[in-house]
Image (cartoon, rainbow, N blue to C red):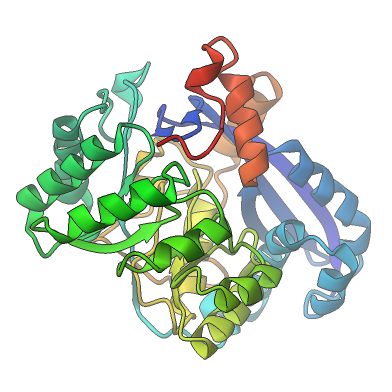
Length: 409
């Protein structure tokens, strides 16, 4: 069996104007759908980031993929030397192999450790949706602590999330601590809470806030990327007793040794899009377990193909004992049939259908591809490209309101 073709299909999907420390998400975001086709016509699909660098990398990889044996992916990884491009192609190949063999992807990865994967209620401050009637959830503006509690109630009532994560670095730090206090008051003091300022706090500010959190009636599971560098994380950990998680400063295998040597982090957030695909995440799981590091899962503004892939690989990673992040509840349109993928008590059941267990909705795929070709979209895949894209998107705003000059506080 050989791969006969590779299609790279950029799409633009609707997204709420979610806030973070760089600015606000555009209401049109870019993703890329990858389709690999075997000689017999069987297809496998994947989804990845939508910036031009990733798309160009995928296009350049076509000559290496066409004609290859789908069971032999290791040479491709070595030839590409691009974990993000490889991750997308490998995921599509695993979907293909699952369909060819009648096996779910988690079985091809060695078998599932759990029958369902728990996800986090991921709470963003946000501006009001321009088209509230078509919003998937919470179309209103959420720019205060009280408004955030109202939105969190919608998330919990609709999807049953039991762990809540606050995307911070937007309001003044003390206001964001007040948000955590109100969330604990609303959902119970034992509800696990996380806070992620995306490096917006100085070591001194983060130290003060962590000590204040210890005096508050709430349960903080970890601080995620509170300060703006790996070295700053190491300094911070000498001052506080909360675990530190990261997806900004440990994003490839070469980052792990310095993180361990400097005792900078406790939890690495995996991501099959850039940690070398599905098998790369399994490797990360083993390395983290070896060094007694926790493993969670990072997310971006993804659609249903990525949601399915995240669920399969999380199910097969023994060290993933923390709930996984997901933006999926915010998404009001999708490229898969029978969307959306459902949450029950904050969990997604691990599919046992062949491959990833999802099929492309060809009409929606074509519609969103046409929109991509005819629209300005926000697409990024790294912290650097994120800062650049936000700066460009907010070019009409006064510079000091968006310049990614961390720490902010």
